[in-house]
Amino acid sequence: MAASPLKTALSQSAKPIHPVWVRLCHWLNALAAILMVLSGWRIYDASPVFKGFVIPPAITLGGWLGGALQWHFAAMWLLFFNGLIYLGLNLATGRLFRKFFPLSPRAVWRDLRLALIGKLHHDDLSHYNALQKIAYLTVIIDLVVLVLSGLAIWKSVQFPLLRELMGGYDNARIVHFCAMALLVGFFVVHVVMVALVPRSLLTMIRGR
Image (cartoon, rainbow, N blue to C red):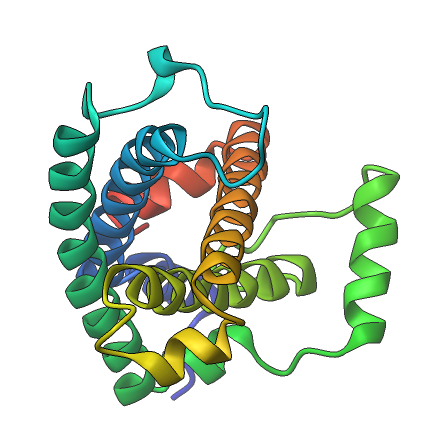
């Protein structure tokens, strides 16, 4: 006997959109990334990559270079291990391919046009549109680049191949800064989108 439409709808609504491990990893990643960016700005100011451009001290974390480095390294380990767990569980459960693929340039262009004219809908929060897919995949890759470039800066002598792949120590600092800037840009857009679709925040807090 087939289930009634009402029972089917109730069953789907009871199923969490984001499991507990996704929500926990999401908020821990967000915390680690924010701490790393704010402390990283203070570290940057101690030796600016781009001459004449510094970050206002009021929005940095650490108070001084030594304090900023302590915050940065503490958040780095949180981001590293939590990121490994997040990627590992996404791959093990098949969620990575189920949520982010298929993805095509045509779909991205279509959803971009719809977003620009205000017609991109978010009725079903259990599915990502093409713009969300490419944004989340980009930020995952960006975080990997941040970790690798940071490692090339921190342990430049111990990882000479990684340092050279970044184009040398000075270029690794530029790569690290640009990856950080991309992460901040993603964060700003992400917050704006959450403000426009507040239901998405609730699903990341309670799962439904």
